[in-house]
Length: 432
Image 1 (cartoon, rainbow, N blue to C red):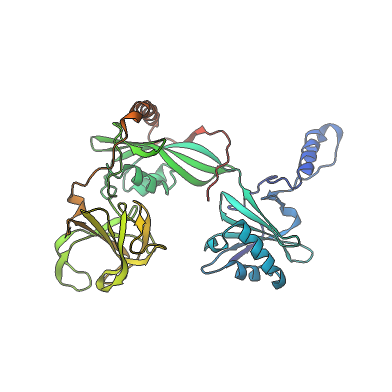
Image 2: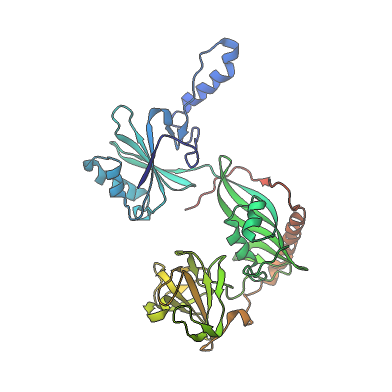
């Protein structure tokens, strides 16, 4: 576990008066501030709060959870007396899943300045919520839902060298890459982008005290490549939801184009390839997608797992049957995702494993193999089935919404400083 002392900026936002432990003091202080010039009142300093705890009353340490640490070992490192730990752990179990504590999450230890003993803990599983833990009798755990608001942002970019650089130039958050690829996957091949390609996008952003802490969905995107322009509009009504083109056709086909988001093809499907390990020519009946170790591998279509094991040169792999015609296989995994085993049904886009280099592999990648009627084929040359179209009853409403979003996209200029376009009414956004 890594520790930092003091109270810095960044993740430690100074939340004023959240949970209002001293609401009366805060109200009085504001009255004093408003009137002191006229009547000469003494200056009263309003304390800063973090999740309801006054910072000036405590010494605060920040701890980052390391790999394989659990709540019990953390309490030891926080110097919580052993006779208190059982009660604290049981109280935490009633409030949240203590097994979900994982590497990279934060704990804030509030120590009494006089005794240097911990009095409170704040466990922050994510930026949207935290748990405030009182360590002395009576031990109690309270969930804090932070005042996150959602605004709608608009951005535009032109690709000069890479999509990544276009995002940087347009001050666009890099995680938006995954959303763009997901929205446009049926129309745009993100492995073959060209200089001059351009895009405009409207998306949701979650903010806490003016700082971005997460991204919501992409509402609409326009992508122009050569003389073709593609649109993806997010539409949700009753039981249907997803991205659709201008005619109301789904932007997602039955199969994803790649099992790894925003990867690169390091080796193509071939009937005669020089094997990088064996140094002999042999068929390579798959497509290799290179990505860093641990990158999520996704099921390219819904189906049933038929194999999840390790075998020879394939290394660790998962195989999925999608219907009576199609099967897919994902080789050289670092590990298989939890719960993935033969007989389990998986959804399109579900994480089934993580990129590795097990078996005959020179570096981290996933070898994606595709079967049609029992024969391995190149999926990039196959005409694959399309997803189900939008029911006709929803088309009139969709067309009205589509026109609104297209006009909004067309108003976004290229190469201009970005600005939020639609601050939403303050609302609490809660994410697990």
